[in-house]
Every structure is written in C-alpha cells, then in structure tokens.
Image 1: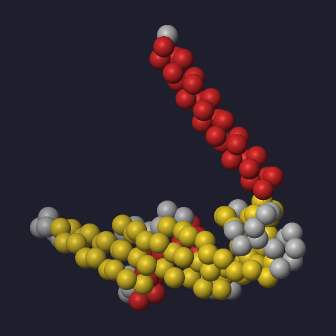
Image 2: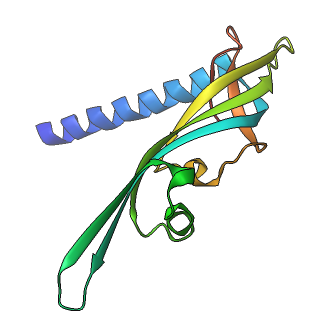
Image 3: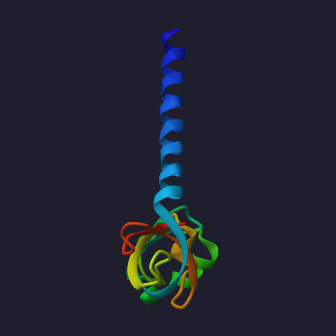
Length: 138
C-alpha cells in the first residue's frame, strides 16, 4: 500500500515540475528568431573496427569537429561513438523592446542541432521578458 502512495507522490511531483516549467516558459519568455553567427564545436569521435581475425582496434579523433577527417562520415552515419559540445553564438532582436542582442546557446552530441547547425541558419529561441540578454532553446 505504501508503495502505491510513494509512486503516486513521485508522479504528482514530476507532473507538478513539468507544469511549473510550462507556465514559467509561457509567462516569462517570448518567442523570437535568431541568426547563428558562430559555432564552436569540440568533438571526441571513437571509431572501433573489428578485423577478420576478431581483434578490435580503436581510433580516437579529438579536437575541433571541422578539423577531424571522420566528421563528415560521422555526421552522415552517426554510427561511431561521438561526444562533444557546441557553443553557438546567435544574434536576435528582443521581442519586448526591439533591441539587438547576441547570446550563446549550448548543445551536446545528443542534440540534433549539434550536427545540423551552421553559420547563417535561423533558429527559434525564447527570450526572457525581464532580461533580453537571457535566452533558451525553443
């Protein structure tokens, strides 16, 4: 019986946090379009190959993604183990006062934007009402 109460309490807590987050986003943020001006990606690509005799060899590529030879293949296939971070600098016009701002968003290798974004792309963001320099992903 206590297990049922515990599970119910956890579910109510999770639903409450999700509701709070949704209300916070709708009341404190306004949607806007941002233009990507710069992307700084760092990658760790780990490629494992098994030879016909069963021996495994591991190659690791570290550094900027654009300098890694395997980046295009990894981006296309996503079959290698990839971890990394991307700091994306965006420019936008704040919806509340129309001021021109720039800020940074952070993505990791689990986000599709990590692979797909390039300079000049437009993305949807949310701009904080009381501080137009604070943004979040839409």
